[in-house]
Length: 254
Image (tube, rainbow, N blue to C red):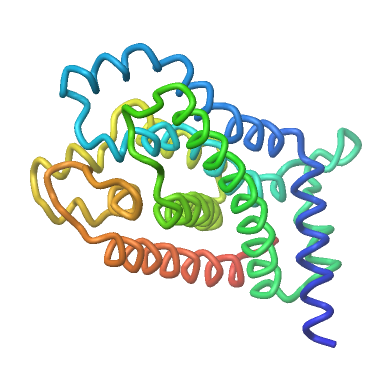
């Protein structure tokens, strides 16, 4: 009975997430951005490989996936921020969260169901994007890059899922989707504060947005971290932040 109830709750949260227009922005961005980057940068990448300045050739097919993870970040934020939006003009102070908690007052269970629904959606998104990106890279660059390792592809998808859960956890903690998403996107695509910190101390390489990339890339900054170690550290970060977010969510008023 409990198992069936949890399955129904996950399905409900998945439907709710797919009903949000902003979630579809995240989905489409995650699916399109990486393959598009492969096509746009094909000429420059080919020249860099031929001139020997491209770094590890085995990373070439996986590097574009970095831009696609923005979609996973958006999905993680929207899964929470949508609960704090107004339900309509007739009741501007009423929020979706009130209705959600009326239907499911057990908050820890609600947090878990949202996390599972988000993980499933990001995993599917990541798998489709990874396959499309790797195949397209092989078509465009041919023998210039080695065949993609399926294990690394799976690790990349797992990284997407963990980053989606990370943004979900941070939004639970701060209850502000705009601030959370802005910080995550700027840190991921404009100027990485975490990367700058690695120039100050090598311990910064173990921050979640840096260490996770070691799960599927061979060359990430100046610190070498084994893929398994990177995965365990990244999982520990996400688990700790999810625990804190769930604890705060349980104690706050709706």
